[in-house]
Amino acid sequence: MLFFDKFIIGSQYEKYEFDLEYEKTTIRNNIEYVIYRYKKYEKHFFLDTEIKRGVFLSYNGDILMEITFLF
Image (cartoon, rainbow, N blue to C red; front, top):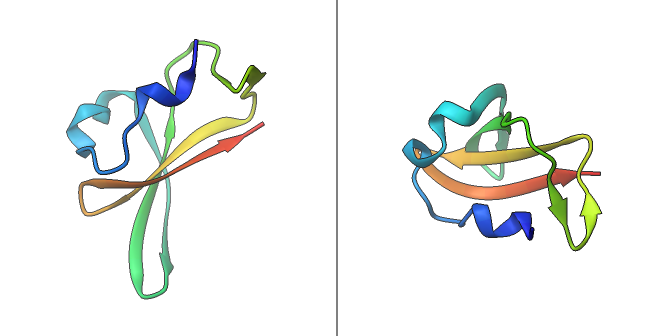
């Protein structure tokens, strides 16, 4: 399974809201981002490498701006 297909930059918060857990709010380049951990309990892979430490989604307003994988 190619996990990255699950998220699309520019998608709305509502699409994933029940699978997210708030982590923190940060400001970069005068833009506020709210960062959530994707908390669905399934194995995640990116380019055949298991993502063990989490998937984090960064939103500005309700728009997905960044996806971070921690291996």
